[in-house]
Length: 435
Image: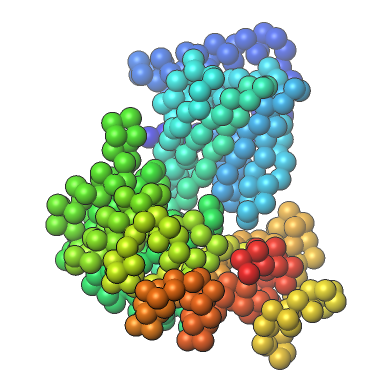
């Protein structure tokens, strides 16, 4: 377990401007730090190393800005650093070309990666404490023409597991989703693109159903956070431990609840649906644009219609939208095109309270601070099962679901805009493509 040390912020300004001698000294520090840590060298000695301070300060500042990712991108002139905050990338303080390989090597050492391998992609993991709170960092490297690009995903436990009420569901959608969880068996799917919060929804759901009477087993790639009283299995392609093989074994472990990190192929899809038919509550994710297309996606994978209709309980599609900054939000009138779009797309609030952030220091002058989810919650009832068996047409499934009260992602987003939570333009950018 790594931890942060107290830093002197002014050191960060001097590191990239050090002369050749200091750069050579930092290189020696990086190459020897792994040996020193293994040999039990004093923590104070490592703490004083400039490159260690530099990396720790970078991580601290990213956490303080509530970043979800750090991008370290080599260029001709040095190392470009960008932080992803609320889904948008922005430039951060760059590093010189002399320091660039030292930063990458230090992070590799912390993650237990091979610092000598610079051509092949690598994945690693760092578990640290920042401000006395645990943080899990997932690393990925990729060789480019100027050196290794590294992306760090910052996984904050407080944002991965939260009460169902805090997941952004509208009151109607929350009731529908909780009704899914009343089932003792069946399959519940969460769909959406990468980075839309599917893992947060699933982990929070597992935490909600977790009790001493349940045997919960997950199979993930990777395991992003450790859950108490949950048996978590890490996929390992090197030994041919894939989702399908792990899932077969899990079903012999007397589970009540099974979570499959992602359904990627027909074999996994079929095993998951059969597990849902044999008395297990199965949760999983798919990459589809909306809830109705999850049905056609599973059928395209080769799942038999009778298996799907008998096992599927419901589908949730979701996206993340940015929230107006609470410190600088003010009423505004959308542009004509936005207002026309709002009315044409089904905005039904007669007195919308449109607001937007004008930009301030709290939101880095973006007008947005924080994110929430918008949802499309589609229960599968008897009539929908009949539609799937007869035609399995996504548009027909969508029309029926909407007739039964389902709100589309776009409608749910526009409702948030009319309440002043976000802007119409933000909803258009996030949810319009799913029409």
